[in-house]
Length: 215
Image 1 (cartoon, rainbow, N blue to C red):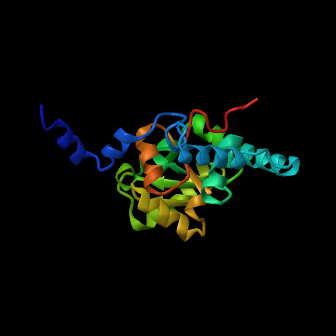
Image 2 (image 1 turned 180 degrees about the vertical axis):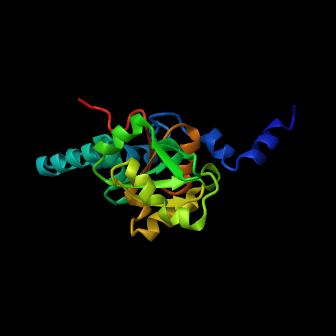
């Protein structure tokens, strides 16, 4: 019993970070008190969230709508990184089912709900393919895989990266000239949140709220 947390730590490199993670709604600021540091934080936060000009606000609203995120998520990312969001990364396993056909051909079946969301997405879309989740691709099949995927997603996928960690995401984005600060992860659950954090992406958008109506 006494070593159960030690065993857990060896199974997941990010377990300590997960256990220490602030709750939902926490902005990683100092504890609310009357100290000088807390006062400076509140003053800076109020200044950062000052309402922009109507033109800038409208532009941000339109961009947020195209990307399927909220105005607040877009603005927070801009304040934190100084970069405008324009791309999304999604794990292939979340987007589609990959299997072999009767003649050993690769078949990609878009998950219906995800295909409808991708059709509405107005940014650059990248998929992260877990090598272990795709049934034994040859080099030639991997070279043709993007074309196969895009038959299921009407050409909306710009590139596919192969791997299962943050380094694979960073490498894929770099190869396509996309700064990692300009992309967010679309995922489901804590595992994908950790994946996005490991890649240094501004945030992870839960697929259940991605491109959801905000009115």
